[in-house]
Amino acid sequence: MVESAQHKEHRIFGMTFASLYPLYVQKVERKGHSSDEVDEVLTWLTGYDKGGLDRVIADRTDLRTFFAEAPAMNPNTALITGVICGMRVEEIEDPLMQRIRYMDKLVDEVARGKKMTSILRSA
Picture (tube, rainbow, N blue to C red):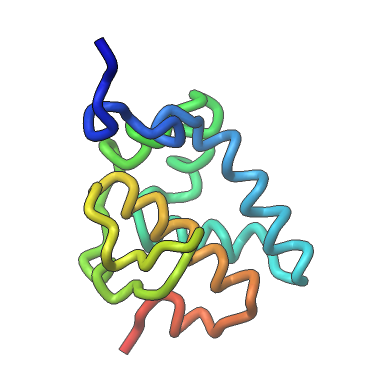
């Protein structure tokens, strides 16, 4: 029996945060930004502190678990809009995929040099 596309889980959900994090850092550092800025947007998004991020990296936590155990997803995530990986983040139906793409979008904005107050959707 062939699995339907709806029941097949995307492989990114099983990727470890530890495999993605250094790619984010490399991306922003190539553009003259720092890992501290990556940490700032990740803590804003998820509620993890630096120690929590270090722990999920050391534990090789997958993205499904990373978001399921996030201390406090930011209530302003709905303000994150735009295109990442060819998709409008605000239109992604799968909640986990949307959270992953929010994370991608925030890191992309750091790399592009957007002001942190704008990235963090501050008033």
